[in-house]
Image (cartoon, rainbow, N blue to C red; front, side, top):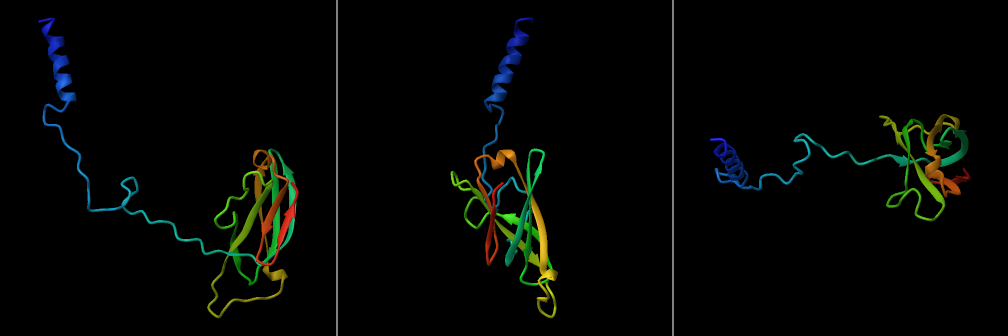
Length: 157
């Protein structure tokens, strides 16, 4: 009994592992073409519809522990700009390898007015936003550029 019990358990484990007791086969679900790892109610993100700001006015650099903060003041083409961000220009990296230049495009959403966009004065269209770069990101960088529609402003970190 002592010798037969371990042999029986071992043989049952081997048979169960190889599919002897009616193992299932794989089947491909041809009903959907979605990624099975995504939830059923997944919707891809909406395309970014923000526009570049018209004119970059100033860039201020402030040292902070572990890096630098770049504060950019710009003038939009119309009033009501919000949700400002800095992105790499379309189809490129922010810092192409070995160039020593980080380049950002300053983008903003524009409020939708029912009677058309309000231009107003330059002061009423002025916006300010900031971004931070760590010392690691700034290693080997000699210039940071911010791009608007009408101009490009650069600063040395």
